[in-house]
Amino acid sequence: MKALLALGFLLLSASVQAKVYERCELVRILKISGMSNYNGVSLEDWMCTAQHESNFDTEAINYNSTDQSTDYGIFQINSRYWCNDNKTPRAVNACGIPCSALLQDDITQAIQCAKRIVRDPQGIRAWVAWRTHCQNRDLSGYIRNCGV
Ligand SMILES: *[C@@H]1O[C@H](CO)[C@@H](O)[C@H](O)[C@H]1NC(C)=O
Image (cartoon, rainbow, N blue to C red; front, side, top):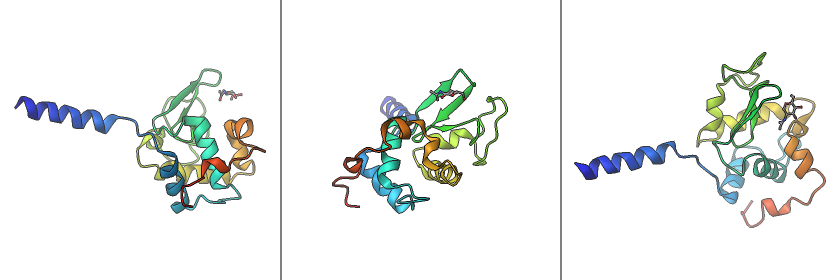
């Protein structure tokens, strides 16, 4: 009985743990999800952006006290424009999803929302991390030896 309880606890802890993607694991998922050159954004650009936004951690959350919005998940998608967290003033929810959907191990919805974001005229420039860490850099290391 004690062993069963311990096992149950272990499984429960495992299920609520953040998933941190391995570099090539993420590269391959982005590739099969059609992110390679989606709206002109390369796999390398997506990888560099995710690295600097979340370190590939699906449960990354950062609150911005300036405008009271929050960034969620592997791409740090913002609650002001893209998702609903029921606490951001004047929020838009253009991706039509709860922000919690952006924290799942399965990043399907985060990818769909990221695609929606880059369809706007500003494209990948929407991500501050891309401008400060990825623009005009050699990004080849982000997909090296991943077989894509
Ligand atoms: C916080 O929000 C302000 C206003 O929207 C913005 O100018 C600033 O870049 C944001 N800070 C971060 C770290 O995202």
